Amino acid sequence: MHPQPRRSTTDKTARLTVLLLLFIYAAVIQPALPASAADCQLAAAGQLAGNDEIFGWIKEICALGNRRPGTPEDRKTAEYVLDHFKAFGLDARLEPVPMPVWNATKWGLTVNGADVPCFYINHSYWTKEFEGFTAGPGGIAAEMVYVGEGRADDFKGVDVRGKIVLVDVRFGVLRQSETTSVAYFGYDPRGTAPADWSQPNPYSPDNFPSNFQRAAKRGAVGFVGILADYYDRNTFYNELYVEEPCKWPIPGLWLSRSDGARLKASLKKDGNQATLVLDGTVTPGTAYNVIGMLSGKSDDIVMVHSHHDAPWSSAVEDASGVAEVLALAKYFGGVPKEQREKTLMFVSLDTHFSMYQGHLDLIKKIRDRKMNVIVDIVLEHIGKEVVEKDGQLVETGFVEPRGIFVTENPFLIALVTQAVERHNLERTVVLPTYTILGVPTDAGDFNRRGFTVISLISPPLYIYDSIDTPDKVAFDQLNPVAQAFADIIVSIDRAPARQTSRRAWIPKYRFQYYAVVAKYIADMIRN
Image 1 (cartoon, rainbow, N blue to C red):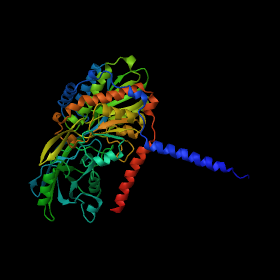
Image 2 (cartoon, one colour):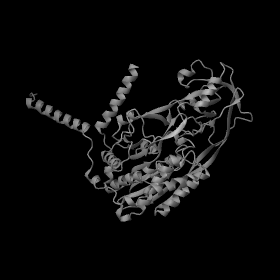
Image 3 (cartoon, helix red, strand yellow):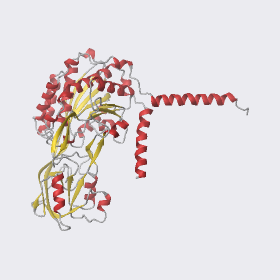
Image 4 (tube, one colour):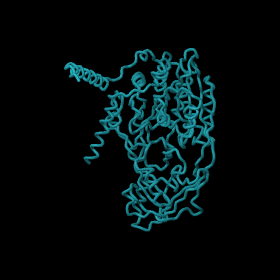
């Protein structure tokens, strides 16, 4: 074989240099805002519902009662949304979804003869999908044993078979520094959410339900969880955290932080006798998704959704999100069809506080009907920040810090970033969907099944509690949020569908995330 000319090595080096420079450019330079988006500002923002009108819808939804999925109040709320969709000119319908309705009717706890204030753990003591549960006429009488936080090491050498376990339930911590370290973009012009900002994470308690399941597996007959990191309250209406029934087979109760501390202080070294009561029903029920369509020039669909079910007559969770969907549906319902390039699909889902049956049903129907949903835009939790000081709940005067999860797409990231700045959505970070956090929102099932998503959410600690009343809504943010998302929808409507649905691996942000993960692992090894 003839030797290769020397210049081939030079050419190879040159090609490698060019590739390296392109790689560095892609890793360092932020995606530019597409020119088509710059002119897509909403032309008639004044026609959007104002703060007062949006807040009025929130109060009307709250007045319908506790909106737990499958209940009469839940159906009334679906019908309320349906009536408004129709009034706004949408082709609207209800889509029923069968589901089991878990309902506690009686609960209580006594320890060593003293009553202890408590609240039931939602979906506990569920052993058969459509069969009620009871602790019997006298309740479950057994020895109570404290097992710390109920982690694997806490159970070592402790026999809990036939006993009621008492456990400290800890919440994870949301830290602004960790959020911004992986964000596409952060907007906090007044610096009101500094790097050291943190609060308990209400979405995923740190050691629950793993400690519950550990207790059940080891033969415990009851579980009592002390809400150690929550407000000093016991009315925490937890989510199920799984999409299957009958995962928590023993009865469970919540205690407030102070009641739990008093109980632990009163326990004897051993021989503590407790009686736990939890009775209830599990019956066949029906949830209702609400679908409203505005046809456009094409069959490409922009979906906009929230969920109307809730733990209580909840305002921020998620009457606020539904009201934002109503504001957008009303505005775009007034836009002539010939001015809509794409079809718009407005949705109010059910079963967020069950097993997401409504979400899964809609996903199946979208696929079965071959509907080309190019993006799912989700709005949740327009709430005030509330903190606990000296045992009292106090408003800070700021909106709760919020995140917008966006599928890895430079066009969408640019649109959302632009809208956040233009409409001054303070205390907002724009986040990727590929981190270990995933998408902990009502868009979660859609994201996991490959849909492109833009999902707004905030994490107020009070959203699982009866204190989530209309006064917790961030009133002055209602119209700005609607304007921002109207801009996003208009921009997507005018852009080619492939520009919205296309995904792109963006090296800068990926390496930013991988660096954070590597540091976390290194810190774990060192410690």
